[in-house]
Image 1 (cartoon, rainbow, N blue to C red):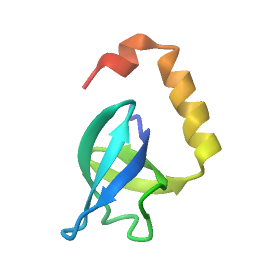
Image 2: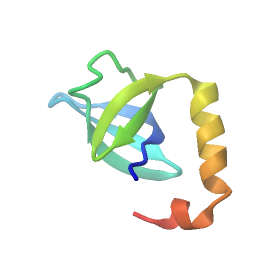
Image 3: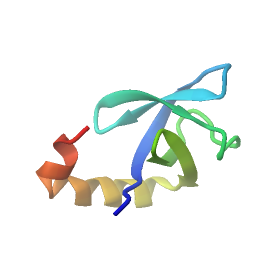
Length: 76
């Protein structure tokens, strides 16, 4: 099973990467599939790539669901 996690873009970098916040953890991800994404946007992240821009409500509902399963939130 694959899982895409919502993240908020904190910083866009010149090399097509972005720094995102996922439940308080910062990661660099690739924006190749979502070049329209901007700082402050929520994106679904899978395998180091932003695969879709989503709205804040969807992102928050998904994050709230993930938080109900601590074993999912604690895995890296």
